[in-house]
Length: 225
Length: 117
Image (cartoon, rainbow over all chains, first blue to last red):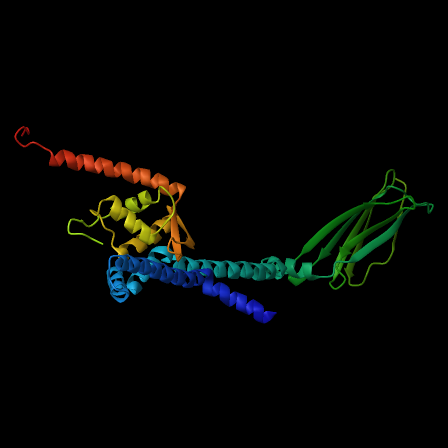
């Protein structure tokens, strides 16, 4: 199977032009031979001996090799160059597309390209595992859950001695519970400011400093305003 | 065969004569030379060696096509036929040739006695 492919490839590289030239050479030889035979018959008809007629016809025709070469040049001259050029361009196209696919995939997959241009603090901050979630419940003085209370969370980190801050917000559900996912890093020190506000209740703000572990469940009691 | 009164073909006229010879139908190379010679009453002869490069040049230009067949002498021969573009080209060449002949005729028939300065 592979041998056949290789043979086909070699055949293609050798080219239809080469085959055409071989066929052409064979054809022009036959064509010249026919012409000389007809001319020989003409001389024989005029009374020459067959040998003499053959000699005269051959002489009259001239150099077969030169004429065959001229015919070949007229018929297929230049085609070899075009065939070679075609091969070169096809090869260049294949190499170009292959290179584009290979290097293009590497370029797309190289995510460090996106982060390497960022400031050091931002880059290392993005590298952190920001999967820490915060959950809690908001109650009134009597321990009843407060639905629709607004929760504002501000998370502060100091990656590579820089300062970085992100804010999130949520509302409590019927049980007064709230959850915000992917809020703080699990492998970096962080601090959280938690502000809670509900209608006809006082604003309550809590600051959780120097945290390294996941936050515990937050229970927030809002006094009536 | 060339006679004493025959003249060599003018450069560029061989193509036209070949195309003209193929108007009635397909001919092989030898028949073309014979037709040109006999039709011109032996005035014009085509050298065997110059005919075939011209035939292949015309074929490459698409003015004639060829196919193998049997000759009257029962030999394998290559027969050439006129294509549509070849016919158009022939008309163009004949027109140019007639213009040239008319111009040369006017010059050669010029009467110097009546010529104005």
